Image (tube, rainbow, N blue to C red):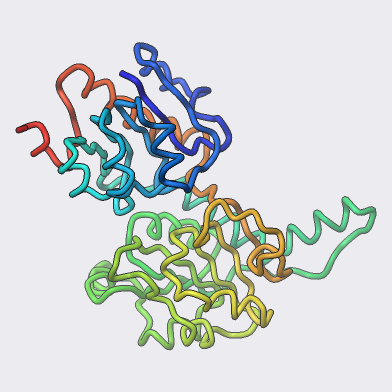
Length: 323
């Protein structure tokens, strides 16, 4: 099949062992990000299969209606950025392994790294010594501090284990159902939402972005956080009310460490979340490790092979096959 891979910004996938699964196919790898629907449709017009790297591109009905040759979209994980109804209407099978029960250890590790880097002022010290200077301020110790984890899920559970190992105290918040599960598991749940934000030295968000969770953290939540406390977001930018994080970042009262942005790739160095000294930004690298990409794209490429062999797996809209 003619396979198009979108948004492989570092041209990484062809270096993975699992890329060999596509050796019998005609593969085109796009290393930039195209937002214009007409231009993207022109690129993909001859493609029979499309491989997505997480949510880097939105697959809309407008795009799908322009791709008469497309038969398969293959990805791994959540697919809220794909118009499933439009896929079905256009006869496009969507396949995605939801990997139930398997957390992204890479994302959890980055969360810990951002917490440590922010709390110990590691970027400031690195910049100072590289400039021919010496120490640049004084960091703080995490042991004995309180980590607030918003969302009682798989990645948060791994982060909690890391926090336990370095002597942090962990408290939880999230949906009513999530809080109930946390209590049943013997976890410490904050007395209230306000107390969660006000008493956490570090707040880390670990919630899946859905229509119900979009903007779930608002300006009042951020305002409740203590001076010099740290907000970490390695989940999704849309969890925070539009403009709320930018407003707090400008005030300089909080530390912020983020791996996700409303617009990606974000390449404007003047943007407040890239330019403020109290913000530590990384370019959505939570899951971007050699090990994690091999794990994820072995699944994705196996879905392409299975479809080509007439035995598709991990189907989201199998009704397409009935046609």
